[in-house]
Length: 77
Image: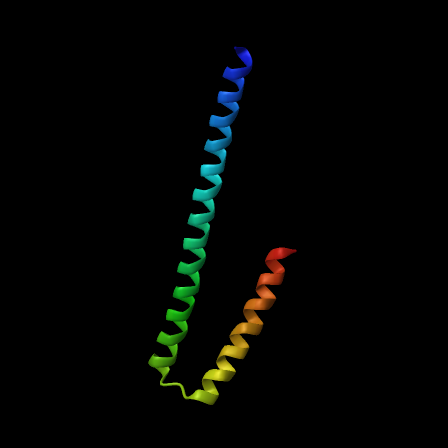
């Protein structure tokens, strides 16, 4: 009898933790998509504001990529 109760509790707790993990993964993925969408919006908005041309835009993106990569490395240290 006690074993059945323990098994039921273990199953309920396991289901709860698995549901939380699933919800957390969903929220993280939503946040990542939101960040990338806003990064794109900022870049496009800046290009439109400054009437940037293709070659200049490529250089801006390279510089932006390099600087963000450096900063990301600093955050990881």
